[in-house]
Length: 130
Image 1 (cartoon, rainbow, N blue to C red):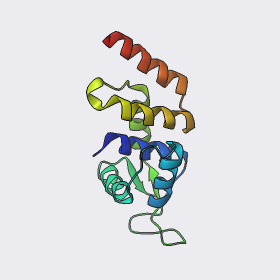
Image 2: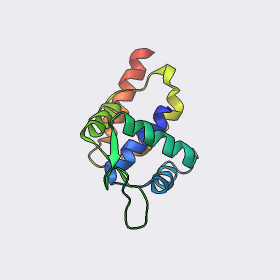
Image 3: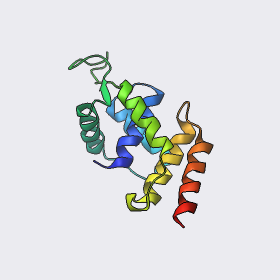
C-alpha cells in the first residue's frame, strides 16, 4: 500500500466522512493536482484501511447513502494512526520528497493539526540526520 495515499485518505476523512470519488477529488484539490490519484487506488487503499480497522463504512456494512454511494469514516484507531503520522518525521528511505509534500499539504488543511509543528518536527529530524 502506498503510504502517502493511505495517510492522505485518512487525513481527508478526518475532515468528514466521504465516498471514494469525493476522496479522489479532495486529494487532488488539496495537493494541487500535482499527484494524480487513480480511483482504483482509492478503493484498493480504502479496502486495506478498512481491513486494518482504520476506516469503516459510515452507513454500516454493505449499506449506502441516499445516492447509493458507500461513505467511509475514520475509526478511533484511524484517528490515532493519523495523529501518529502527523507527529512522526519522514525518513529518507520513505521517498521523503513525495510523502513530505503530501503531509504538509494535508497538515495545512486538516482540522486540529498544527502544521507548524509538523514542519518543525521534520526540520529537526532532517537537521539531526545531516
